[in-house]
Amino acid sequence: MLLTVDIGNTNIVLGLFGGDRGGNRGSDRGGDRAGTRENATLLHDWRMRTDARMTADEMALTVRGLLGEYADKITGIAALSTVPALLPELRVMVNRYWPQLPRVIVEPGVRTGVPLLYDNPRELGADRIVNTLAAYTLYGGPAIVVDFGTSTNFDVVSARGEFLGGALAPGIEISVDALAARAAQLVKVQLLRPRSVIGKSTVEALQSGLLFGFAGQVDGLVQRIAAELAPGAEDDVVVVATGGLAPLLIAESRTITHHAPHLTLRGLRMVFERNVG
Image (cartoon, rainbow, N blue to C red; front, side, top):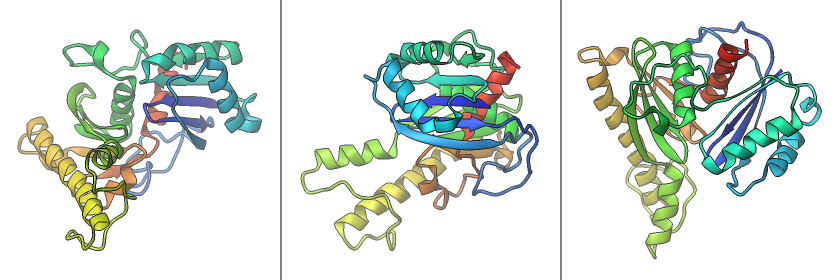
């Protein structure tokens, strides 16, 4: 079994994969099986809060606690961290608690098979590269990956699987927190779909602006990117949504074609196979 670890700014997501390299094919917004060319079995996944002050031992204690009976059954580890302070702690954790296992930590020098057509590839978060690999492998290209996390990332993939660049925007939760902190008469609201776009209360007005506003932002950026990526063939561009907040926006977006909730974890598995086999 392969343990995958995705350390993001807000959450750490763990995935446990079995050895099945087969899988079903389909075309459904509701899952990450749509149009897959490879669909390894994701046995379990867990989510924990990111703390940039966490030590390797604290991280290992939590990870092993979540894995439970599987902690001593894993046969390999693939991991990444977009939090610089936790990258060395991640290395220490893996070396100290699973020293005998093959492992891949995604950082410069690791083979991903993704050509990076970017001015300075070292600026790129490892998650964006891994998502590009997974999206192209599962859905083909050209493609746009919309990752709803601490920031909303738009990652652009060419028809040949190259990472071309993209756009970054403030994430939904950051915007909610900032609005509540800076506006004295506005409160932090639960992100739910209001009764209508025209809110009949302050809460509904905030929910409308946030939910439909971000959906409009996604559709607007996707349309502009697709027009530049595939002029005259915009409808051929695959748009893949991932990240913890993706389910909020899928039903409201007119451009998202696939939902892949475990895209980064699947990409980590692919990177592991490229480097370890």
